[in-house]
Figure 1 (cartoon, rainbow, N blue to C red):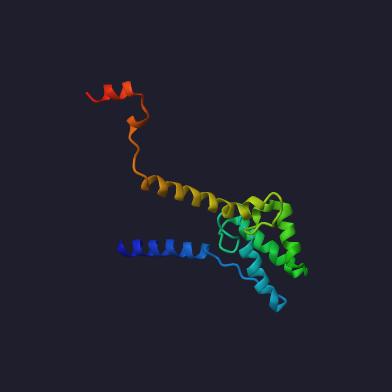
Figure 2: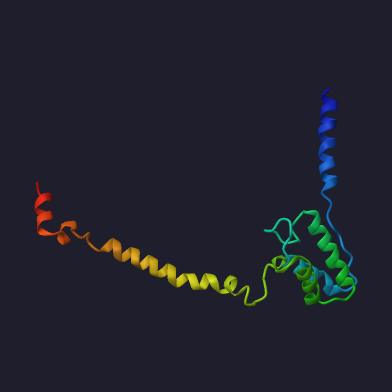
Length: 149
């Protein structure tokens, strides 16, 4: 009984290993392998959204890797491949979106927020350093008399 249980556990482990296949591609030109790596690192997986297609295990990412491999084999340059992916999946598929009017906030927004954050920090520091004002200073004299019971 123990042997059957051990064999079953090992068989289940082998099924997982067999399922974790690695994509292998044979490139015709030497530079294509490096271009393939760059492109798959630069393009975002449409399903996972926070992974590039090089690291994603989603079926759509595998399809996109095959598509990039095919386009490299056809002799297309990087910009043509990126343009194809953007036309098909939108600007979202790029990790580094092009600088346009629509994406200017993405590029310059964080830098624009820094001065505002600095002003808020300075205002808090000044507010903490100032002594608290007596609330009765600005009240009419009759109100001051009633608070000193």
